[in-house]
Structures are given as C-alpha cells and as structure tokens.
Image 1: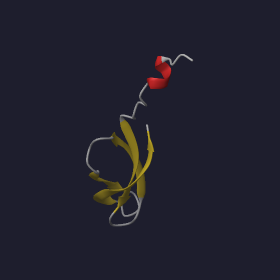
Image 2: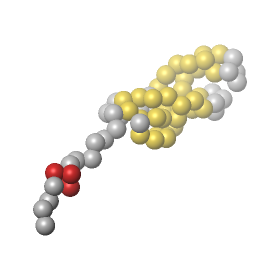
Image 3: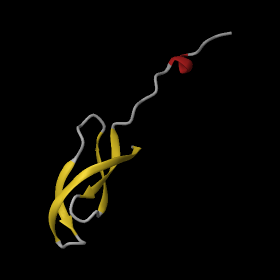
Image 4: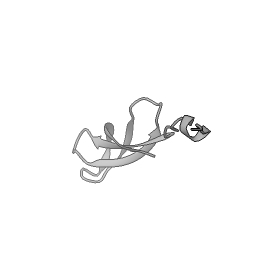
Length: 65
C-alpha cells in the first residue's frame, strides 16, 4: 500500500474570522471580519437604535472565513 502526499497534507487554517459585535449601550448587533490572530475587537460605530456613536465589543466568533 502506497501512502501519497495527500494523506500527509496539513489542514490549512482560515486567515480571517467572522465575529459578532454587540453595542454596550443598546444591545444592537453587527457582524465584521477580523484577522484570526488579532485580539478581540472593540470599535466605535454608529448605533441606529439610539442614533449616536457608541462602543461595540466582540461577543462571539460566528465562523472562520
């Protein structure tokens, strides 16, 4: 039985991650893409529920891209 190179191939990890961010003021959620090796995201964005700028913190990872 011959073992081919296909069996020894490493799985390629995703370079980016789709994450869900949640507003700390109103709970509004938005999805963004960030690099997999970066730290958790915190961004200032416009929140349509309160019609003002506020901080969004990363809630959870949705999927690898």
